[in-house]
Length: 633
Image (tube, rainbow, N blue to C red; front, side):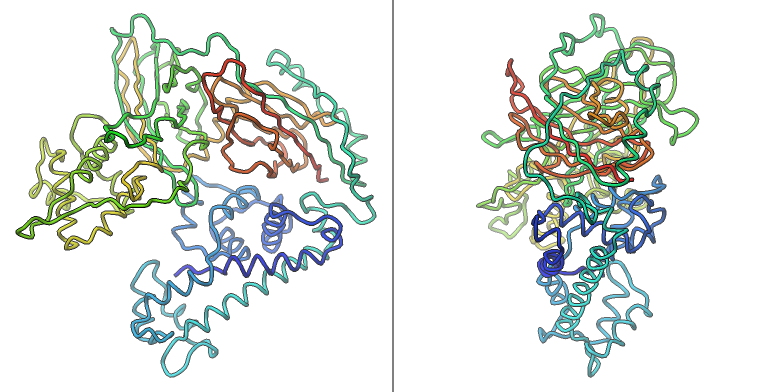
């Protein structure tokens, strides 16, 4: 059982501790600064420096626990996949943003579900059964450790109300102690975000002059890269005090004439394959999607496109996913899956479709779909009326409602990845993994084929409908399990698709028929972030932070989105504070106008993406970005 401290109490304790510091008395900390200080306090309880990397699941679990979380193994596995080698401090901060602490009320509610007598306690015998048999199973030794707590156990019963109070108090005290240690330790304090060393002058409220940054076009990149760091004397000075530099970047949409996607003239003679997929928005705001491997048998001209999938929504229902931006990154596999080379991405656009045309040699390619996350966000509007999923006729027989059948038909369209009108076991298992977390094995699939309509050993649309009707009958008309499936697929209580974006990929080649296979359904991170950084460095413009030649902001602009990447060429980490409050006519993927990112030495990271709101505007308003830089030596 994963349990966490209450967010309200923990936050209050942290805020109280921080308010006693000399700095916060003069300059009250923002919630953002408090968050980053808490992240740093937890991290530095486990590691000597925030530059140290998390290199194992155990270290990740320990760091999260010090941050007031108590992650389950499922949560750990979500962030530490078989491809993960290490996580840095910035990764840790992102995880903490997604994994919110549980409140005391939520914790009590979880225990109350196990309280059969509703008396605030659970029999030890029941506790053994529940904790060792259900969910993420605990060992008997772990359960004994809970039962042996004298303060919360008596007469063979576990007092979970006292336990919750004890647990919350303990976590609050741990957080307070950690923050106090961070505050008084001068060596750790020098690593805080935006803090000053002892004896440093107070912040001057007057604005810092903003010199125009140097602008580097791609033609200048090679000569710039060979310059090296010629400002050693300036950097030596920053060892004695922390400095800040600010400047404004003006970003507008690209005015390139060749940004329009057009089909090759002879495309009707080319061979084509198609595959569907979907972006799904997780509870923590993370986006996952299908990923693909493509095989090209011989060198060919290739035309690739991706666009949102148009479903047969009922008249009058909104189709918000059709406005979600989509992109496709093409990486070539060299020797192994771990060694992928970015080849291209779909930067050309025709209405809602994005595409790329060019030549690809024979080989295996990975296709990684991407969306900025600017449009695909958690829904906040309340649902006034819940849709009905099932009903009974006069005889008591159970039926699926017309509206629910229409929704199931759309879901069938989404999970029928090859578009042949049938569901193979492989396609059905992507659906099962998404909705239940488990796969259907061959034996279960054989039973499914015996009881439901199939064709060529694949499930028909009618068979899929009957399968859901059977589930409704198994629940005696209770729709709760059906709603779990619908929510997993991105539908709200009004049966509107609001937290998913189905898409379709088309691939044409002039010399051979491409082959495509869906291989994963994973988070849009890792290889994707590397690909985005590489594409922005290759295609975008670069601006050097004035006075710091090794800190470069790369910006790629097209007529629909703007992506910024920070490149840190120095041997030291840098912390960038970003202020987007002056931005106009756009939305960003972080959901914050003010935030901070930490960039490790000799590395790059995606700072943020902007999506232009009005695609049809000719004279787009500019987007202003204010960067504040702290160099930590």
